Length: 450
Ligand SMILES: Cc1cc2nc3c(=O)[nH]c(=O)nc-3n(C[C@H](O)[C@H](O)[C@H](O)COP(=O)(O)OP(=O)(O)OC[C@H]3O[C@@H](n4cnc5c(N)ncnc54)[C@H](O)[C@@H]3O)c2cc1C
Image (tube, rainbow, N blue to C red; front, side, top):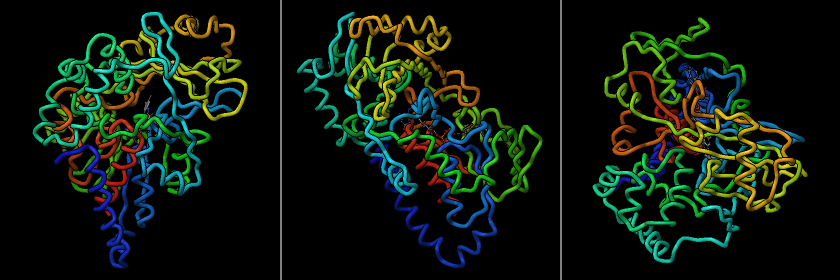
């Protein structure tokens, strides 16, 4: 039976076996003569390099950006406050992330939020709004029924979109509009573009708060920095953009700065847009190239507003609205101080509009949306920071968006090793779209080599 999460358990078991094998002296001797290049210093690349380093391999990490972390991107704002411009929440089910944090002495703060609602101009505080009783009952049945689905049922679910699935199961009116707002926020594009299997699996297999549970104290990028220290900074070359991978005889990797590197194996962790820019010799199999060219990534914009005071009062504040600024959350929860940050989080077409808006236009839209709950908050704005992932030069999106008939068809093709190259990254993970997934795939790729 295919489940999204079963892969992790199997991979974990395989890994344990391989680690035992790798600890044999003969195996270790072999390992010391091996060299591996990891392309990308996001969490997949760093997790892979760390595992290989621990097993005695010589590892070089080549990274395009001028920092480690990739789509985990912590950003300091006023007075010691740190916000996340990329990956934000670590889930209660994300056990490997929790293990790594604990191993590196990083504290995980509670980052759970309680959702307020603005719908048709009316404000309802958290706990004072809900779905209709019939839909709640139906939803619970659908989630409970997920465990009984056969592989064929799951493949069938992948043939249509999540909005259609909700409608076909009797979700309508206000229930449908609110689910559409919330679920589209999760996937980063309208749920009319999301595989019904990917969505049902996500909601059936996630923690109660949908893995929006924790966050690393001081910023999620701290984990990337700790991993980089453990790998050895001298083994991580920033501003090295890989442009060519030659596996015809020896394995040679060329960068845009003219440098070339040789290795026995490669782990390539870059998102598919970046992958499409690399020249492969020999060329990638046509099926893989087609999958790379087909997969889309979600457009997400984060517009962070530093306010002089935390007028929202509740530390666990977040809010969904049916207006242009669609979702807000307290981005400095658990960080002491008078000032605080609300992030206005938009997805899809709304993200593209916010991304191109000036600070003045966005501040005005945000203030207008929040006015029914808090009055005029515009004079409290101290600073604004915007990051739009839709036009990020490297990823062209926040995370992979598996549409209709893509989950079972594209992922295995994208994950297939090619000659001496193994692939990793969030787009290949069972915990797809999550930092945990990136780490899992990086570690699996490393184990395939060890
Ligand atoms: C806005 C947003 C919100 C998110 N929210 C959450 C969340 O709440 N919880 C959660 O768990 N996850 C979240 N995620 C997803 C999470 O951040 C990603 O799944 C994860 O960080 C991806 O890691 P990765 O290593 O697969 O890819 P990346 O982090 O993208 O790493 C790949 C690296 O490869 C580098 N690279 C690309 N091309 C080349 C090249 N040619 N040569 C050299 N280097 C190259 C890139 O610069 C990058 O550093 C979010 C992401 C975004 C953007």
